[in-house]
Length: 264
Image (cartoon, rainbow, N blue to C red):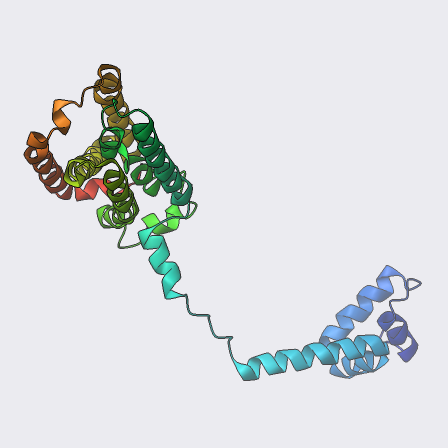
């Protein structure tokens, strides 16, 4: 084909006529790349529905260019605070903790001869929540959260504080119902929490919580239930020891803050 394609060929090309051979189609396309007149003729030969679609697309592009980029929605502040302070996966574990303490109060009422079950459970009451608050398997956004500037020990302490804000009122209510000292429940609770964080710098928070809970149950809680005697570590004279453990382990954890930059 020499010169310009005939109007009939351009019309058939615009209609997508399958009768055009490949050589003719290739020649028309090569010519259209260099000839503005034939491109204009091709545009006039396009079907009405194609022209309508092109006009609609062109108008949409023009409006988008005129309006500029769409504004980026501002992230809600409560969403950011939620990621820094808690994960929703804590809810079932905290609910379970409340249920266990309630069962301890009921058993104490049914069997007054038993040692205080609330005191026996108080040291390990926050440990499930602390473990879940710092577990990559329980936090679907842990990659994003762990990469923020506020990750590490500060993030762990914030989430632990949220766990304690829920567990401590539970312990207060349970001790009030059973008539035991809140201090005897609170200080071991805090000491085990800070010790979990301190050990977590070396073996991981989840493993530390599991080990402390298992050790307390096997060495103290279960024997106390069988002997029906409250252990010495939960007598009023032990308050000073628990306070020292809480302060010492918390201070030690702050000296190992860099170890919490990689969650385990």
